[in-house]
Image (cartoon, rainbow, N blue to C red; front, top):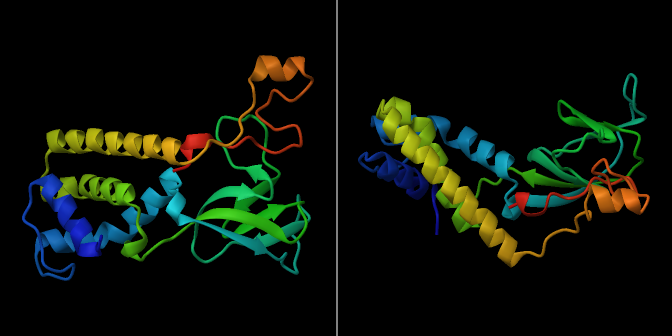
Length: 215
């Protein structure tokens, strides 16, 4: 079972550095990794949409409407890191169609009425909830971020970057096996022949899900 110190020690092992007993140890390795641990964890959760961190909620509209452009605004959860789905609309990349909302600061501005259903990546602090493949990827990302401070080695950083890329690829493969893919459009040619949208949107206006891009 992962713990903060075990993740930090895995990162130190990747770097070829001595391990620590506690995150609060008064040694350079502990000080460097403790300083970047929280930010690196949140960046990894946000970057790769890990499914163990995905939560669901319904939000009530705030009493005050946006100054202009939209009819409603909603306060994002305190632990929000990244958006996955709004109502039946999946967040995806590559579409040229503008989403029917805008995230500005800690609020969602939209014309979609309340309650607004949201799936999102949450900040998960409890290491016992981490997926094993996330722990692997997180420790490598932590090692990459600490590499300059602890080793000043460009060669080691490049090696860690390659290992990190391979770790993410493994996680995507496992996800593809364990989870059925979301329905995807047939393709622009077939969609256009059937009179549907070719912009990356579903027929009902929803953005097509990103499949195994979500871990």
